[in-house]
Length: 141
Image 1: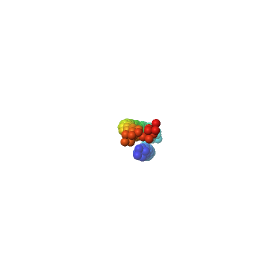
Image 2: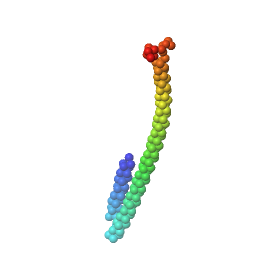
Image 3: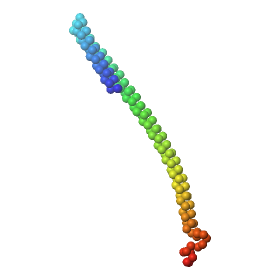
Image 4: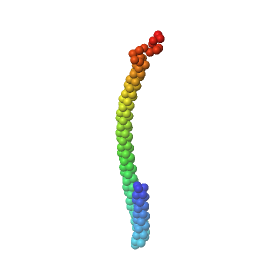
């Protein structure tokens, strides 16, 4: 969009300057004056038009610089917002990871305790004789 607008401004300024030159030249040529007066008027109009062109160029540069500065500021603002959002998401991910790690440790500890209880119960069942009598292997000893 900005390119199109600056192209339009440039085309307008070019047309304005060219039209001014043509109009001034025609007016001077058709005016009833001496050659010296006509040359002086042409010189003055040339100086005037050059100054106007320089002013127009300076204005166009100023607008371009302002637009570039605005674009830079917007880009910096968007980058800062993106960084803030990324930091927020990363912090949430860390928090969630810590929560899940704690939950996982609790589950693992519960399962380890159940497994330990089952192991102890199995061990006790193997060492306790059935019906109170010693097992065959203990009786032989």
